[in-house]
Length: 270
Length: 355
Image: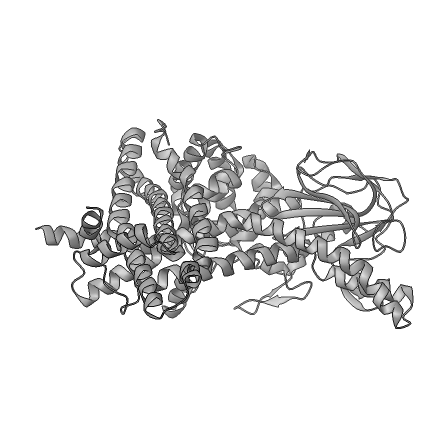
């Protein structure tokens, strides 16, 4: 039953090379947008981690460098000067920079890891049969990847869709404003357009991407079976997706919710 | 029919997803920039910090007009036409100067006369203010006067100086929508850039941000006060110098003001304390965020009188001076940064420029 519902959205009109290519681009963009929303949220957390690490290393260097140089007969003043240099190497701004670069790196890594397989033309087709088989495996022979991949892609698609809705609402509002329809009509019209586009995006791209991720995960699990990989190794495939991609995608979905919340508020003024 | 509908929905979804990615993600921004470059339409806007990043060296623009960053950064003078227009229309002189510096994109002659051009994005703002572009060939002063008056007329309409400046770089309609959304979400100070900027359409937000943040950062920087009640001298200016402890040539990212231990250190402007702590280099130090990317830092203190997240008012006593950290004698190391790039405080602070 579930397979039928999902496959009706996933399997259908993938005819035509151009259309497939365009859908792949859309899927890629949606997942990347969702992951970016999550990475934005993770930025602050990463800064705290980098700061804590830096403090730990600073403490170690401040005592270790003068002590080590002292063994080689270097004067305490010179030792202290070298320690100063080492401590200054990573200052507050550098820490901020490192946190941002890490967030960017994480975003690119997770985004590409999730999005690229979805646009791979050699990937197994998400047919009704393939989906039914994947859902059966999900329940009867679960692996980390079988659960993590569709959850990560689904959450990233949801986050991406929420960003799309927020962007479209603002864009629609700015577009209809010159028509001077009045604040109520303007606000309601913009919200209706944004929600309709969001619905189309999640149906056409979100569900399709999630289905494809599930089928691909099942194909990899089957390949592991065929290659006679150990049970532990099979079940642990997808550890990166589960530990990094899923939280980042969920972060993205959570981060995008407040912007969407405004659509439900009674406010209609300009 | 069903197939046609399917194709339309597919296309809508794809366009929406592509638009969202190009306007919100770094990868999208990079792709857009490359596309603009390939089409021969490179992004013209740049952050204020990049102008200052070149230090004190003069740079040359496309017309071979020498641009002195220190000329651009000098606080506004009362005797200039722009200051007189600002006074007539009731706009802060510092804000008028900030807007004009951004509109001139840093171009100025050696006398500090700005080469002002009304931004292409300002048409909606001009219309809302009941003004229009000057005829071709008009002088810089005319363009400057129109810009200043536009901002002054939009301030009461949009509710804040920042919103009026943002309207120049995007449009009054978009700014009103963004403020309305920020209000609906109960955002603190919805008419500030931090309050409403996030709710502008992403493409407008990205293109307007450098202009708004730059103009407002300059408007704030031009009005900063002194970090000490009395400054006797500057013992070490901003710029490259031989480090007194390390002995090698290093960039000095602030100014050193010799002062006896225990002297009151004052906040140079309103803001929020982002750091109040101690490390081995800066000793006890405080960093204050004045908004729009402008921060000030006060190092080597003996005692800190405020804590992180505290709000400070101009000239509030925030610390006592000292000799902590890597310091060879009691002094205050005062540092000013725009978008995390250290700039010479003496270009902005009147109290320092006279030393």
